[in-house]
Each structure stands twice: as C-alpha cells, then as structure tokens.
Image (cartoon, rainbow, N blue to C red; front, side, top):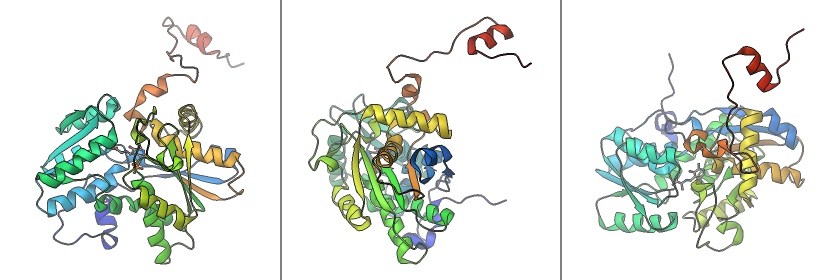
Amino acid sequence: AHQWQGVLREYRDRLDVTDATPIVTLGEGGTPLIEAPALSQRTGARVFVKYEGMNPTGSFKDRGMTMAISKAVEAGAKAVICASTGNTSASAAAYAAHAGIKAVVLIPEGKIALGKLSQAIIHDADIVQLKGNFDDCLDIARALAAEYPVHLVNSVNNDRIEGQKTAAFEIVEVLGDAPDFHFIPVGNAGNYTAYTRGFVEEFERGAATRLPRMFGFQAAGAAPIVLGHPVKEPDTIATAIRIGNPASWELALAARERTDGYFGAIEDETILAAQKILAAEVGVFVEPASAAGVAGLLERAAAGEIPAGSVVTVTVTGHGLKDPQWALRRADGSEVTPTVVEVDAAAVAGAIGLEKAP
Ligand code: F0G
C-alpha cells in the first residue's frame, strides 16, 4: 500500500536533498485541501482550506523542520536551537528526538500554549523561558548559534523556508493551477515567504498559469508589517503570532510586491469569531492564530475586494488542540460548560429541546 513519504522524499528533485542527506522525517506534508462551502457561501468565492494542523506535531512547522533537521544532521550537528512561540519548539523537539540529537528551545515566559509546551517537554527538549518576548528569544538564539555548537532552526535558516514551500506545490497539484488568492496568518512572515516561493516556482516551471495574490494577516496587537514599524510590546491572545519584529520582514515585503499582495491586521475578537465559524461550519478546529487568514478572507470579502467566483485557498496553520482554552469560552467571555442532568433519556431530550418523533 502507498504511504506518503514526507516532503523531502516526495519533492526530492525540488529541494537541496542528495544521497548524502540523512532524511529525518515523521511523514509530514500531504495535508488535506478541504473545500469549504460555508466559507464560499459567506464570501462568494470558491474557498479551500489547507489544514496544516494535520502534520505530525500539529502545525506547518514540520515541513520546514524535516528539512532543517536533516540538513543539520548532514552538517554534523549534535544540537539544534530555536526561539519559539510554541509550534517551532514542538516541531524541533520531535524531529531532534527522531534524529537522536538535542533540541534547545527558548520561549517567552508564560506566553506559550499548554499543548505546545507539553510537546517540547515530552520530546525531551532543553527548555528555557526568557523574561522577554519572542523577539528577545530570537536575538538570544542567534547569538548562541553564532558562538556555541548549536545549529539554528528558526525560519531565518533558509532550509525552513525551503521545506515549507512544499505546501504551495501540494495546492497547485490538487487544484491543477494556482488559486487567485492565498490567505495566510503572519508572525515572523517565514511561511508567507515560503508559500510565495513555492507558487513562484510552480509558475516558472509552467505548472501554474498565474501567481496567487498573497494576503497575509497579523493580529492587531502585533502588526508591525501593517504599521510599518516594529512593535515593542506585541499583545494578542493568538500567542503563536505574538511577534513585534518579524525576521522575514524584508522577504515578505518583496513577496507582497511580486504577487500584488496585501497585509492586514485583525482584532482578537474577530480572530476568535473566525475560529468559531471554521469549527462550527466547516468542521475544522484550529488554534486562534491559525484563524487569522480566515478572518482576513471574511473581512476582505465584506469589503468587496474578492471578485465573485475567485478560487481562494486559506492556510490554517496549527491544530485547535494545541491551545483549546479559547474553545471553552463564549464571545461574551463566559465559560461554556455542558449541562448536567440525571441518567434519564427524557431529561437529556428536555435539556437540549429534542422533540419526540411523531
Ligand atoms: N500560525 C501558527 C500556528 C504559528 O505557530 C506561526 C508561527 C504562524 C502562524 C506564523 O508563521 O512566523 O512563518 O509568519 N509560529 C512561530 C513559532 C513563530 O515559534 O512557533 P510565520
């Protein structure tokens, strides 16, 4: 029976992988592109969701990490280091464990979701919380990698971007062409850069007849690219994208230019509303940051910026189980607790307003 081989083997001819590269894989990539009629109906476009939460550690980071860790091992590295808002550290920890090398992860104190922290712990990473934000963590990770024998696996490492571009290949393969628009959440802007590179490569080799317009969305409290200046104290419930000084800022601006793209900012409540719509109407549960692209699509469509019938793809970057606390909360802030009743069928029917069949 066929089993998906992971992005390095599936796209070997389009990545810097040779016979000398030890392939460290957990079977990442090959994620579903799910048609979303509920979002099509809301926007007038034809909308597909690229569900990156289906990767082995629950986020798109695995596509870049298989490449970064494989190349690190090829180069003889015995340890890798990353700064992270959670998903990169979860992925680095898992792939380093598989490769039998050490992972060192630097995280902002108290600001990473429990699911992600538990992943780094169970995969046996060396974890240090810094009394600062993600941007501080990245500065320190870079400084350590420059002076100590630890290989940097943040997306400033081009191997990460290379691995992540494969998601665009998969979209073009499934649709038979590039979409008209691609929507995506933005933190460090590495993934925005990676998708653009992937779509450009597909266009240049003739597999796609067009480039999608790349639409990226930051959280309003952490929107440096939209504001045009770094944000000193980034703040958002979407902790994955709580970043004030994106590492791939320049690359992202070039990508926007190349694709006639767009960057927007979304308020936290709007992100949570989009997360809810995606879960309740499409059946896809994502962490809050991952809903920023969906929120951006709904906003741009409401603004009349998406022509009817456009083919739209939206990357949802991480699984909802990473950070489930937001699912337990209503829009007004109150907590959702399922009703408790006696063990009695009529009591259950009464509790949910179920009428007897005639
Ligand atoms: N969505 C999720 C779920 C993420 O974890 C991240 C980034 C992004 C979107 C943004 O991607 O940084 O390439 O623009 N998370 C990083 C981390 C920062 O450390 O896990 P980006």
